[in-house]
Length: 183
Image (cartoon, rainbow, N blue to C red; front, side):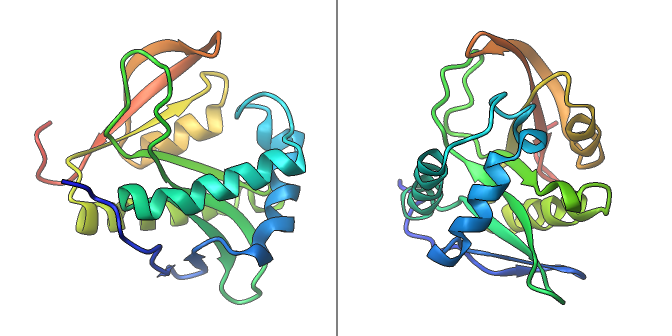
């Protein structure tokens, strides 16, 4: 049975609003993905504007196909773009396979680092996934040199289940079980 057909919901936290991507978010996304600080551990190189456009199209396509996807994150008080968080079904060629399991991901603008925004936004999406998706398990893939993301993943309850390679580079696969799911 397909999980698709779901629209991106708006989530709010104490300081943030998470919503669907729109054309008005494109320039903010281009700036995010062109920043070498952001991409150092995510792909290793800044993205072009056309690569970011393809990313936004992928984000939009996830929701109707699999019933989950990515949110753009903004400060509620100012509307300032913070970054992007969500779940993917990227069908990555990685062993062990992540296919069929929501893969969490997050990328924040450098100005937003160290303010607790990543924890706040990812906690919101994991709470949503636990309630709405009822997925017993979520996963994430992190560059082993990305200490900040590994620390965040640990705070969120993710634990390493495999060390592998993706696109020729070392990577760590982590998993988190929903409350009440088999551990």
